[in-house]
Amino acid sequence: MREKATILDKIMIQRAITRIAHEVIEKNKGINNLCLVGIRNRGVFIAERLKENIKTIENKEVDIGILDITLYRDDLTLISEKPVVHKTEINFDISDKKIVLVDDVLYTGRTIRAALDALNDFGRPKSIQLAVLIDRGHRELPIRADFVGKNIPTATNETIEVRLMEIDKKEEVVIVEK
Amino acid sequence: MVWTKKDLLALEDLTKEEIEHILDTAGSFKEVSTRDIKKVPALRGKTVVNLFYEPSTRTRISFEVAAKRLSADVINVNIETSSVKKGETLIDTGRNIQALKADIVVLRHKHSGAAAMLARHLNIGVVNAGDGWHEHPTQALLDMLTIKEKLGKIKGLKVSIIGDIAHSRVARSNIWGLTKLGAIVTVCAPKMLIPVGIEQMGAKVTNDIEVALKDADAINILRMQFERDDRVNFPVQLEYFKTFGITKERLEKVKKNILVMHPGPINRGIEMSSEVADGEHSVILEQVTNGIAARMAVLYLVAQGK
Image 1 (cartoon, rainbow over the protein chains, first blue to last red):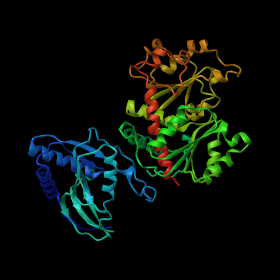
Image 2: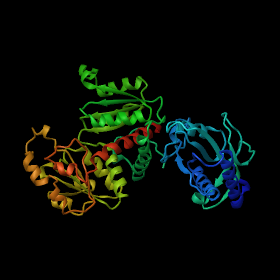
Image 3: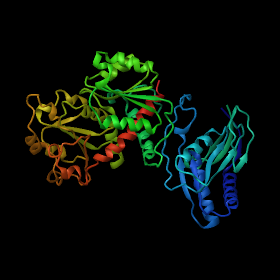
Image 4: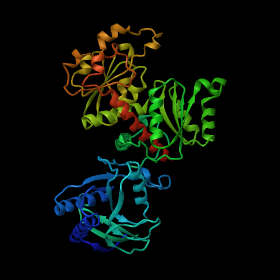
């Protein structure tokens, strides 16, 4: 494992999230009927920051939920490190809502596939959009993001690490070589 | 913490970390039962066989609901109408279930050690749903989940288990689990219902109900099994209620937020009065709800164990 480069620093992460907040509001012509759902772990914190930014711009709160997709993974029986199941907390009715799904890194698209299945079990939203801080390419499913903080072309032997204050006590996005 | 076991046989076998991992996982599973669509696809395509050699309604239903909420297929084997009546042994029955390519057997059996023996002979997962007087691990897990949820912790709490300790697998599993997690456990019963050597499991012993109630954070009241009262030296019902029964009056002198638990089914007016069973301290029905989450967690973890 070798850190190749820092792609985003604290200020750049902040700016990317602020821009995404503006784009979300623009695309949805306001925040009526809009809600955010963060995917565990780091998507939750990015969603919370988006919520704060949206509040600053529109002076109104949007509902926010937390989704744990472990139980919906397509590789549960294959993976050797067994993922720990955490709580899903969606305490509002998602039916007919415009949902913005939030995650840190978009890679194969399998996490998003699982998240879409999970949301389906909670009701029938009007639409689901996807916001990610980093899109690193290498999709294995026909999935794309509506809002992207930064596109980073990567090789398959590299990974992207998003480090956020809330869990990592640091604020940066780095590219790591395996 | 990585779960590696293919079976859940007894809390005696588990480490503190393993028990905590099950409880944390169960905490996450609780939410599934509050949804409109109470189902997640985690065990889709897996088959769970409920093999119950003793009558049980609540435990069997609880396991069945738990497996179904994980999207597993569930088969209930009715022993009364099965080949067991024709003399088939437990191991042969187990091997046949394995040959059907089932993934997990949930076993309730009247003999202590039955689940462990079956697990040794099978490659598929075995979950102990009660074996003789030995252990009933998922009951203790749901009891601990309820305590943790209501009181925020287990470590340092005083928990009293009251009733027929000698013939209770629930008591044994609770003593192992609670003491491993750092609770102080007292068992309370008439002398003839206290098994010899129970202190060696780490429990204190008393024959005085006032001592068991004093300073207790939670009490777990066991069912008196009067249907088995062919035994000698078994107290008569009214005598038991007078000496050990939990009443409103007895609860007036104890901790204000004491939890009253019972694994069910309750004998109203024997182990406790109706007022207590339905009263403000009672978490008996919440135990039933938590039982689903605890069993979902166990089935989910065991399915991934090798």
